[in-house]
Length: 214
Image 1 (cartoon, rainbow, N blue to C red):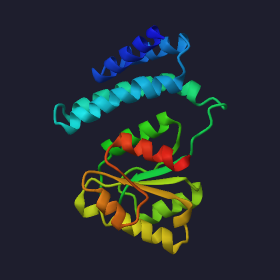
Image 2 (cartoon, rainbow, N blue to C red):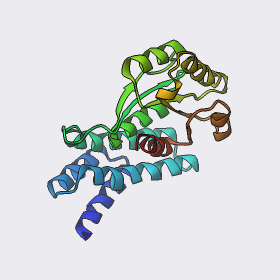
Image 3 (cartoon, helix red, strand yellow):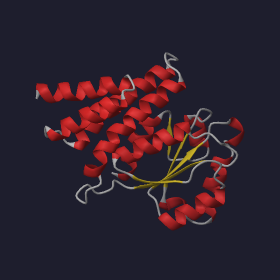
C-alpha cells in the first residue's frame, strides 16, 4: 500500500515539474505494478493538475508553465489510453464542446477536453469560433449528454444564451445538460441564462460532468 502511494506521489511531483517523459515512465511502471488506470488518473495525474491550477490562479506560475504541465499530463494519459479504451472500460458519456462564435481562445478548452477524455468521456471537440448552428448540428448528430460552451471574451458571452435559446426552439433543451466556462463567465451568469452548471476551472468541469451522467 505504501509503495503504491509513493508511486502515485512521484507521478504527481513529476507532472507539477512538467517532466513529461518521467510522468510517462512512472505511469507505465505503476501499471506494471498493478495500479489501476483509474487510480493513477484520480490520485496522481488529476491532483498534479489541481496544484498547477491553484498555482496559476494565485499567479505563482505563468500560462507557459500550465502548458508544460498539461503536456506532462497528456504523456500520462497517453500511457493510460490503451487500458482506458478497452471495451470493459465503457464511456461515462458523450460531450460536445467548443469555444463560441467570435472567440479564438482554445488553451483552456483544450485542457478541459484532455481532462474530460482522461476521466472517461467521449468528447467531440468543435474547436474555436463555433457558430450557434454548428453547435445545434452537433447536438442533433451526436446526441451528447452534455454541451460545454467556452468563452474567454466578455463580448462573446451573449453567444451562450443564444445557443440555449436555439436549443429550446428546436425542442432539444431537455435532452442535454449545459456547462459553461471561461474567464468572464460567473455562477450568476450561468443561472441567468439557465445553464445547468458553471465550471470555474477544468477540475470543476470534470466534477460537474461526472455528476450529470450519474
